[in-house]
Length: 158
Image (tube, rainbow, N blue to C red; front, side, top):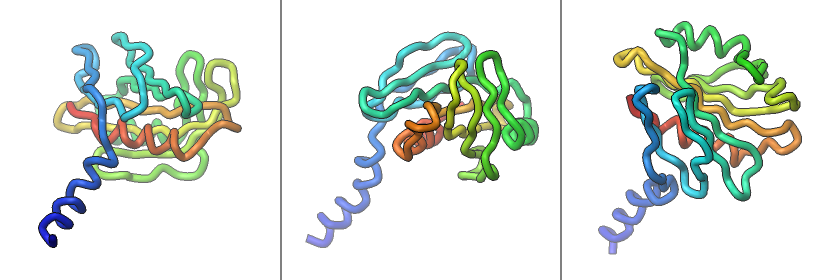
């Protein structure tokens, strides 16, 4: 009985974080797994977009253009600005683990007021990185979207 309980306890984290198929592109230099319940909506050389039937928002996974963790960190501690996006950090970034930095951002995304959890992932060995961005409108932002972005970021492999 004790052995069965131990096996169940050890297997529980794996069951709770079930992941779907891996997504990759040679232009990115990394891969990631799709969290359970999320679907790949679009994938090209510029990144990937995931959506969920019940969770408001999208998850974007896009390559980092910087060649160092320090430069990615400096960018994340100010604002993330690209065509169609101007998201500023609310509060401070937090180191999730080695190579993973996260924060909550607010601003404009596709001409709408938006809020999101953005996780920067960087491999110093590969000199590559990506941003995992769980973004939605300010009023629809939820912990479920944040957790999904974190789940994607934890599966990134270079």
